[in-house]
Amino acid sequence: MLQRLFRQFSGPEENLLGHLAGWLMVRKNGGNNAFLVEQLGAKAGDRVLEVGFGPGLGVELHLARGAFVSGVDRSPLMVRKASARVARAVREGRADLRVGSAEALPFADASFTHAMALNSLQFWPSVERGLRELHRVLVPGGRLALGQRLFKESAGRFDRSRFGMTGEQLAALQDTLRRVGFRDVAVARRAIGDEVLAAITASR
Image (cartoon, rainbow, N blue to C red; front, top):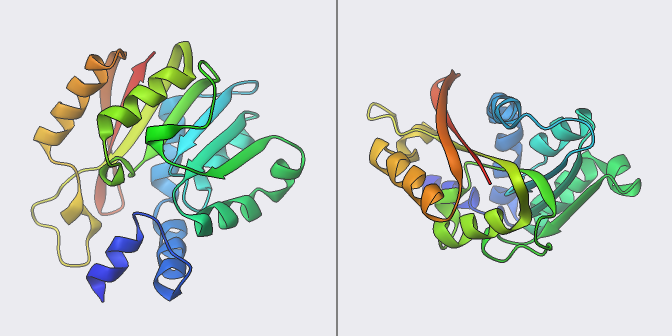
């Protein structure tokens, strides 16, 4: 049962475990979203893309900053829940949330000033293809922030950090960002609750 629940975090389905996974994302990911949004630094007038927005916590924070927000998520359930969370912004044309994936973003070149993804890279079929797509849709000088939970060797059975990114994986991700054309790659870490989040930032 536990493994079935953990699998739901890759794209919650329309069932009891999918709804539970969405509820847990709201309960557990507020601090992570706030940190990554802060690191990304979007402001009023910016156009932000979020890949894997889940229940829409990051979308809501960016809207509060005055940004326009688009997003893709592989889960129709999460698209519905996030759209309900920011229903007014959707009605007013300030938010555009769709079913989709990082590897085939349904947006034109240079559509966004900022982009982010929180704890979703591990579910992408190809991280390099996804990063190339993010590079494509960002304007020159655009900013990217990737948030990844870090691996903790002492993590218990119910601790999400047991599935976190290792130091070797973090270094490989930075190399991939540079290889696809990103520059000024940097990493900031913050302890949030019982886990550590790495915010990997880069410029287009």
